[in-house]
Image (cartoon, rainbow, N blue to C red):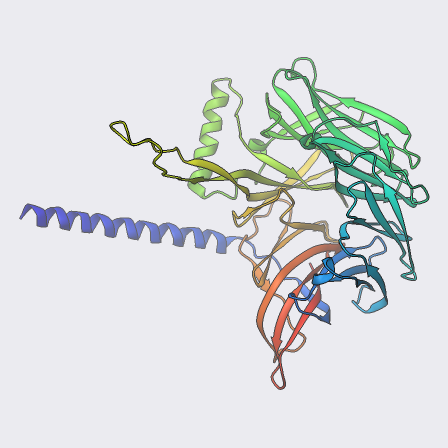
Length: 516
């Protein structure tokens, strides 16, 4: 009798739990349905390249004149001589020109960068100190190439930027920052001794076409005090400005400034936007804004209107209650977030910046190998934690005026997925109305959200990439991606296997314009 009562009680408890889970799930769905749904993007122009992902690869690059460049390679060209193809498209995705150049054996494309008149393609060579540069005229597609020598064999190139026909590189030499100047007319690549630090210290590496300067932002710390250094260099590699920012004397023991991003424009109007931590350079507690004189303003994550919207309602209430208790005790709220900051975007009200919250993901590998059986118990090796990648939870959007004052914020809950490299997972653009469009690909869908000031918008909106004809059917898709093009325009791309209503199937690499 007693076992029966016990079993029945457990059955009732299990049913109650199930109903509780269903109720919570329905409440979450209702909450998301109550949110405003953003308008889906208009899918306008499309073009297709007959191509197979097993034989070819393509990379898509937006150009300053709002055209599009596609670089195409044969996948087996590593072992044999072959051509790589450059194709330029206009805003309607119609081909402007196409050129072919020899893809030499063991040469790998490292970086692509462009200014108004030229596109630069940087290739590695079998010689670790040698790089090959293709300089392409954006109007004609005509290219010239040159070989250049690095100052050391162990430099790994991470980023490339161009300004007035000159090339600037960000590289690593045994985790140490190296800033390099490549003059296409000179064989030797010049090391710029203007910037020092480690890989994680660099926040900004960009060119400002308005003032014709290359800009770097580096975080510095002696273990107790922190500051941020912003440096500006002209096209000859000469330093034309160095600026230091650090917390006020009464704040230095608590607020640790981390690297940030610079707005475009003259030095008198530039704003530096970055993150800061509570006595740490690893975790972020909030955002700061500052002019280059050093007038710093802090914006704690806990004070933002939409920062915690990625959580459920109960979790949000618990978090806010925790902050209230800490503030009542005179203790600052300590958050352990890491943030990846996107480059600053011009906005009708000033500037917009997107930051993605992430954390390192580890997994345990249990070896369970018996190494000693002479004692009472076998000696079992302990499990090891292996780094698995970076997991992203949500993105925040903050809009500042031209003096660096925060105007509004919003957020976008992400899929909580893990990526092998630390890089942006969402693409962002400012629409003509001043809203921020956020989007990313996931399997056959494009997920999107258009955030507005003081409006909660659904995080669950997605759309399939359309085909040329409504009667066609997509069989498979792979290698999807999406990049911001200009304004509210994005371009989605990838491989598709398509079956028309009549006739045989085709495999293509597509470009699809999406307008938010």
